[in-house]
Length: 546
Image (tube, rainbow, N blue to C red; front, side, top):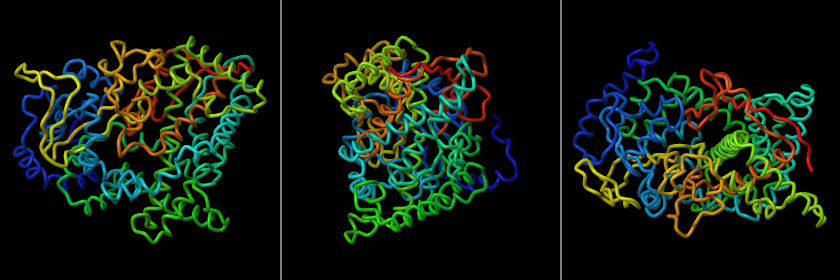
């Protein structure tokens, strides 16, 4: 991709960025470097190694070899000569994400990008503001509250199974059809978060066309997949600009900016309607998401209050995070079971065995204890999430001079082994979730292979605590860990239990148009080579419930 292949409208971005290039480069040259830390050579001055990562065919094509060569920490080059530290070492990640609290904030460009899409919600918030948001939102995701959602999760799983039988299976007679399971799972999780969080019925599984469904469609593919090189460079300069100025970049004319702006503008109008409906219906008395938000907006204590904009943007954040990532994780789980029919059979047998036991005790459906007690199903979920982290990369910046410890020493350019890396204030850091999840020092010599058995025999006491779920980083960690991770896990278990009990999943013939790639969008998207939208085509056969 040539750097200067730009249209006239794109020159608008370059005009703003070029004025800052000299100053930015000078500042970077004056910063203390990651002296002696090994890493790959830069591919170009303009993009550094970020181009390698953003333009790879599959997530991991470039990072996994780096992990093998350099160990759990290495240096890469960002645009315009910037040095970045990449971390996949568990002790280093524990330190940055947990131990240090807010001392390693998100990079300014990342926060600005989040604000363009999701506004002033919890993902953008930092420091005391983030603490306030988190304290307010926690009750909506408590364990007792989540238990009350289980019947809703199971009901939507059963509804999805019925839709598949009627609309995908029946029209094909005895032939197992191949269809895009991600499309259906995304509809299901949208209906779930709408009803569970806000008492709103999208009707996505009933094919009701809601404007929000159209806005969500391919949102991250259109805005994040293979961005133009000039935009990568332009965004790398945002850290040198005042935060207030970055907000106005949402009005830039590029497609990625238009789509983010369109989503946020729509969601603020839609969120106001949801709030109005809730007030009209005399709801808002419990600990569901909408009630918690409305109480916070009315609170007099500033430490427990959300402004109107914060409340609106919290709805936008939960709506997006609560359905898109869950649907994608479910999709990759079914994909791995289709690739490994022996494990799929073991999971189905386990589900049916638990079904028989609950019927014997007179219960109608699974409890959370039933789902969490299915060790084979749990192991395959964890392994699928380990191999396919939907959010595959995070970033942070050092808020002060610091020293990051390592679990396993790395070798410097001079051949010296070091067990800690000193960093200066302003040092940008990449949190490589994809490589941590495949780090042999954490998961064993077969970390690059599918093996759910690892989660059935894992020594938790011997592991460095990093992630909130199964020690994976899929939901991040520490103060910025995903508040809704339990919601997502229980929802996936409930929906998958119904689907796996009733359907057999297989791979279609592995021709070019059917081979699935892990594309590096904002979330790791299943797509075919040359495809323009998210696609996970699986062969699905009804096998009846026991």
